[in-house]
Structures are given as C-alpha cells and as structure tokens.
Amino acid sequence: MSLESIRYERGRLEILDQLLLPLQTRYVKVQGVEDGWKVINKMQVRGAPAIAIVGCLSLAIELLKEDCSDKKVMRQEIEGKLNYLVSARPTAVNIKLAADDLINLANSLSADENVTANDFKERFIKSIENMLIKDIEDNKAIGKFGCEAILSRLEGDSHVRVLTHCNTGSLATAGYGTALGVIRSLHAAKRLEHVYCTETRPYNQGARLTAYELVHEKIPSTLIVDSMVSALMHARNITAVVVGADRVAANGDTANKIGTYQIAIVAKHHNVPFYVAAPLTSIDMALKSGERVKIEERPDREMTHIGEHRIAAPGINCWNPSFDVTPASLITGIITEKGVFTPDKLYEEVPK
Image (spheres, rainbow, N blue to C red):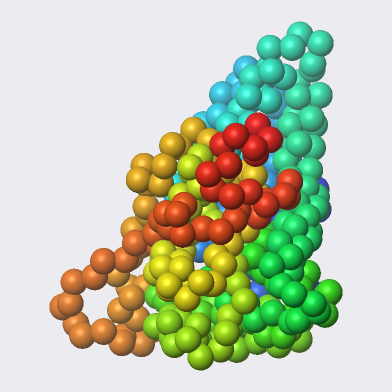
C-alpha cells in the first residue's frame, strides 16, 4: 500500500509533514489558504502535483467556512487567494495552471445568472476535490506508459535497472507517483531488477523520502550520493533514468530538482535512455523554452546545516538554486497520462 501524503474529507485537510520524514510520521492540519501557503513554501508538502492539490484544497477548506452570499465578492477573493498560493513555489507550473483554470471557472460561474451563490460555491469546491481523484488516475496511466516504453527497448524478458532522482512518488502526488509510478509499474510487472535513488542534496528528498517509499513497498533498491551517478552507469549497466518535472516547456526543456541536468548529461554519454515522467499539467505550452523558467533560490541554511547541525564552514557564501533545466536534446521521451512523446513532437502531438 502506497503512503498517503494528503488526507482529505470535506471540511478537513491534513498533510504528511515531509520535513520530519523518515524519522517521524506526523500529519499537519491545513485550515485555510494561509496554512496552505506556509506548508508549500516551507516544503512540508512538495512535488509539483501535490503542491497544486494542497494549495487548491486549502482554498476549498476556507470557502467551506465562509458565508458566501455574493458571487462577485467570492470571485474576487478566489482570484486573489489563488494568485497568492502560486507565489509560494513559483517554479512548479501545476499550481499556476490549476489556478488559471479555477479562476476561469469562477468567472464563468459568477457571470451565469442561473447559478446561485450556493451553486457557485458547491461546483467550485467539487472541481477542486476532483483534482485528487484525477491525479491518481493520471499517475497510474503514466506508470503504465512509462513501463511499456522502457520494456519496448529490450529484447526478451530481461529485467531492468533504473535510476531516479529526487522524490516523485506518493509523497509528491495524490498517490502512486509519476517517475516512481513508472518504477512501481515495472515492479508490478516483475521486470524490475533494481532501482537506484540519489540522495538529492541539499534537501535529501531521495535519501529521506524516495528511500522511505521504496523500503515501505519492499522494492529492491539502493541509495547513492549524487556524485556517484557516473560511476554507477559505468559499473552497473543502468537500463534507464526516470525523473519527474516541475515544469516542461513547449520545446521539451524540463525544469526539475537541481542535479537532474548533470544526470542527463551522464546518461547521454553512457547511451542510457533518459525519461521525464509528468502529467500534462506540468507542461507549459506558453513557455517556448526552458531559458525563461524562473528558478527558485532557497535559503543558505539548506546547504550549511543538516537539522540543527552545521556542516559547512561559517562565513562561506552559498548558491542554492532549487531546480535546473535539462535541455530537450538530452531527453529520450516525456511520459504523460496520454502517452510518451519525444520532445521535438511535444508541441504538435500533446492534446491541448
């Protein structure tokens, strides 16, 4: 059974505090938009799909508490609060696209004279709640298509060794996962020999979270430090790399956790297929290339400390971008819930 990062029933939202994993398992209540912004910004919840879902659900929780009798006022508040939530983690596109869709829905409901204020509120909240269901369905489709794509390159019934970076599983989504969903599908098909996960410095999402999920589900796995990737590919005959994405540009350039770019370069050198697994909500067709992605920079402390223990020399300057951009030329395929697309065909073939 996969881990549950988001617990929701109407009127109640809790998220698994990922800052405490793997040593503690504690859920945090999210009682409105301000709480939603904080848990996203502090990275208590993380992963582009999960950020979008938790942000929008925090708005649903707030709306349920309010007496919304004026549609125009409700529409204005919704737009302002959604834009505020987007500011919590600006690189991840999913929450921006979800916010745009919900603002359009709010505008439509507000303008429709046949829709009462109560109808507006109910339909709007229901649309947000459906995001949870759809995300799990999409992740399972991504897992299926990714599994098929990787196995299609092999001869016979050989087993695969996969490398992944950061965390893209149940802890980063509503459930099942994107890149880790592909790995789950390979494991379920009994074709996975082994998965290697990077520690993913400086925040250690691989060591803390991906490793936690892999052990929890008894998937054969090994943790490596980020600087071991070249040696691993030279020594262990890796079949494929599968990573997630925070934003994919129309030309296939992909922003993902820092360290992804260098793994893609190493994979290219060793002729290892490099896949990006992401829902269509991570693809920003309005963005022509990755050069225009706004890269979030995180606090120095994430590099200089582990917990309360300082590991870096006092006084040293730090540069801590949270993401990098992998050029489309290094990507074999982008795995979505609608199939696998080569970067050069993404704009033409992905359903709009």
